[in-house]
Length: 87
Image (cartoon, rainbow, N blue to C red):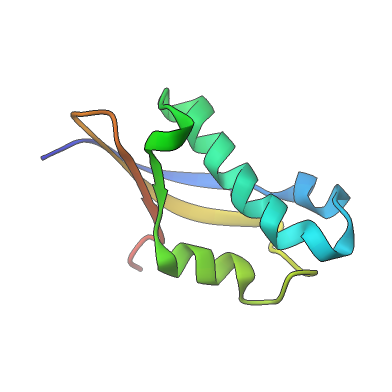
């Protein structure tokens, strides 16, 4: 069962500082780092859902979003699943 479920607003403005051809890739790295920092998880225990990945890459590699809303579920064994919230 899920131990902790939260909604996070993750700022991705630092991804805009990356070269144009690396912005979406850097945004995915920033999402993972934010989850590690705020949910006290290991980097290898953070799993990013495919739909969340598609949302980051939806505008291409050059135009990553500047902020994204994410549902984070932390399980008892320390695994963290990041996905888009159902609205």
